[in-house]
Amino acid sequence: MDGWTAISNFGKIKLDWLRLHFPFEAGIPSHDVLGGLFARIDPNKFNECFIEWINTLSEITKGEVIAFDGKTIRNSDEKKTGKSALHVVSAYATTNRVCLGQYCVDQKSNEITAIPKLLDLLIIKDSIVTIDAMGCQKKIAKKIKEKEADYLLMVKGNHKFLKQQVEATFKQQTKIQTDKNHDLGHGRIEIRTCQVTEDLSLIKNIAEWKGIKSLVKVTSERTDKQRGKYSKEVRYYISSLTANANRFNQIVRQHWRVENNLHWVLDVVFKEDQSLKKKGYSALNFNMINKVALTLIDKDESKKSKILKRQSAALDDNYRAKLLGF
Image (cartoon, rainbow, N blue to C red; front, side, top):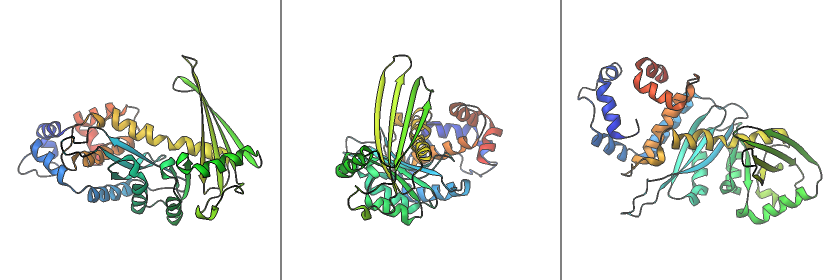
């Protein structure tokens, strides 16, 4: 269910089943009570509970790629009060397919402050943290290494001189490993060429980037098979991992799973951007509820689509009990 009225109605219809697990002596709360409750729950405490629950389900294995990325919850703004839409930074374990935790900020530009706070909450030892250009910060690289993890950080215009130094290194064409990958899915042909070097001689103030060992260049060439349209994109990264072009090609591709398997699903399957929850903390807390539901249906290995799994969980008492582990 996507809203408080639908949730309350589901509770009334399934009250006998629900009472197998909790007494509900006063019956099912109304939609107003549910809305008021989740508007007031402290989202930071709720997030701590979420992280603790996730840790009981999934164990981060060595080499797990954890992608950090932000998503704005559209329609969570309030024009009357001037409150801006919420922007949630999530940490997503790309192999286990679970969101490990989140941190909310007012604007996308504040991701720089959110990422270190989220790192503080997580156990990420032996994992590989990937972050886009917003997270390419010396303090963030240092914190990741202090958490006994490795990093792959995208370099863009926010570090103009660092990017120029990385570009100049690859122009020298010395000591470079190369790996090429072809992808023929989703109606397009994509060729990803990954080049890696451990030559850091042109990187100024290198000691400020804790643990840095290699530079990465990824060139993506895409051709739309229907329209024949060709595009090319070049991205640069710094990493604390030793050079391995094939592995880096895989890691860069895994990073985008946070967009495809988390953010896209929240929008399309859970209709998050269509939600009109604005009161208090309700939008942020419901974002976590959606992530709980997504985690549960992702753990089910049946071939049903995520939409069908949600429908089955609403209609089938036995399937719902299976997902919840009852």
